[in-house]
Length: 170
Image (cartoon, rainbow, N blue to C red; front, side, top):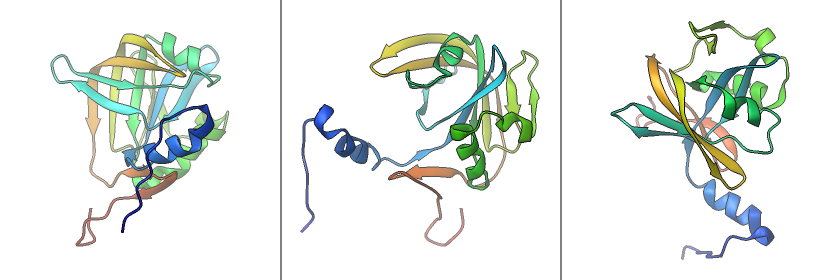
């Protein structure tokens, strides 16, 4: 019989709450903007579409991030959906200060760093920023989208992986 565990999320059981959230598999993105010291990027799996008309998307940076202020103040940013072959890129943005020095990127017409080789990219103009506990919700109006073929990088139960259909092909 399947074991069910119910609880009320609190400061005493944050690991259990994180594990419950980890049951939801998500894609992995890198959000980029031009910061005060140059290009800045942040790994995020808190990405979602909001509206088709107007075309809106959102993501949620953590307030504890040292780059939080850059991203919530940026007038323009880009959200890059990573392919399964870009797992090192994901970790690089999570841990490295000089990742752009080792990366194939170019500035957009608005100066936003655009990373090459992603499955899709959404170039956005900030529409709204909302307070949300220990994160903010940043809403962007998509001004340009870029799409290519490939398999996604996925995050599930604290691990990175890729999706395979039952017949073995994506």
